[in-house]
Length: 98
Length: 222
Image (cartoon, rainbow over all chains, first blue to last red):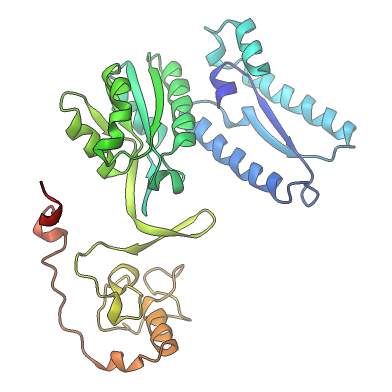
């Protein structure tokens, strides 16, 4: 939520493949919470498609690249996050990195 | 504990649209446990409000704070400065908490950000169920510890109604029949004989129908 508030156009959450998470069911819980957050984003007026969670293995680099390309395309079609319009882009990037 | 649910973001924006400086005030007790109004929910709801406000052209300045307990004057004190420097308080406490804040700060608008739902328990992870209707005249001892007022959809004191199917309530098929539970429980504790006694109509005088209830403990009064 804070990333979107600060102007991020999209957020991709990547968790382990189902059944192989070091935290047993952590990736499944994360998926439920990401879905909940997508609902709140919609209520707030942002497109839920800007937030996505995927389950992917650490060795599956090719699929990861495809997923990243896909969300970039999705976000590009949606256009910039309206929250970013009055933001100082440099400070946003610094805050997200922090 | 008291179980509550948050209002939707559009509802909250409508409530707050005439204000600029807003305090979103969480409560660290029941509503934290039921994931409705604790520190984390204060943060999430505040973020969503800021996003929604900006998209609608509103100018919200939101301060976030969570205190130990909103329904107790001793703990409300911890929010005094934050309440004073904001125009309005959006309480993420239960209905009692929000009213306690409003009574303490008579010139400050205080709005409830949650819908207070019931007294209940966490039955499974992410699932809360009602267990007590706070009727003021507890009958649990007669029914093996299972409340027919709260858990029977027809509030029957002399059940069952005969409509249950496969141990499920006919009004709420997703819930177990309370009278099935009562029967099984009384059988387990060897008190089935209780069911032979016809229970007279309940005294509803101590319930909410008599108006706002008050309990006085003279031994603790000053």
